[in-house]
Length: 170
Image (tube, rainbow, N blue to C red; front, side):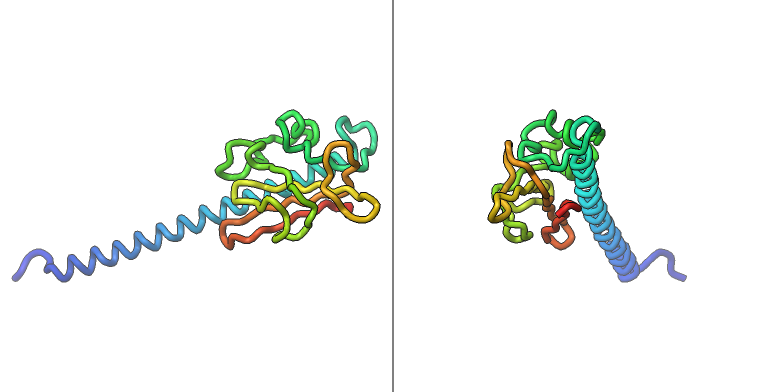
């Protein structure tokens, strides 16, 4: 009677364990990517809801405002806190970003397509595009203009595609 395992049995066992470990790693990585993408979608939706609240009631909830924040929203934390009232800024910070100012950047043009907005968002940046009507078309809404609508552009890791969330009052 022989005792122990043959070399073939050991190689087969190690190979099977290796395959199982590779599958577990791939599934874990995929789950992490999906979780980060879910967080991105949630961040953008949360910011959009708070922007709609700003549109409805302005800075202090006393009167209807009727406009959205300009590109000044992305300049400092104080502007974000006043415009996105009662939001936890960590809840709108992209995965991997250092903070809300690293996350939200202003668009530099008024092109409303996912391929036309500049800069193009990365997986750790969301591009805020407030828009104003100048009588002949929509322009980027900078300080001093009445911002009548907005878009937020973001990129997902799973498909590397850019998506857009728009204001309700278009």
